[in-house]
Image (cartoon, rainbow, N blue to C red):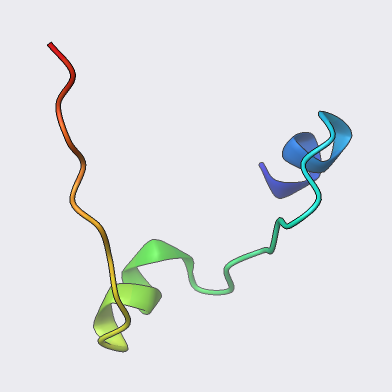
Length: 37
């Protein structure tokens, strides 16, 4: 996914080793998904 985003022109993209689960398990901040209705 990161490679695809870079190909689309996004510049500040990083590969998250271990995925989002590892991020959350480390206690790092997450923002809740807001619904758009």
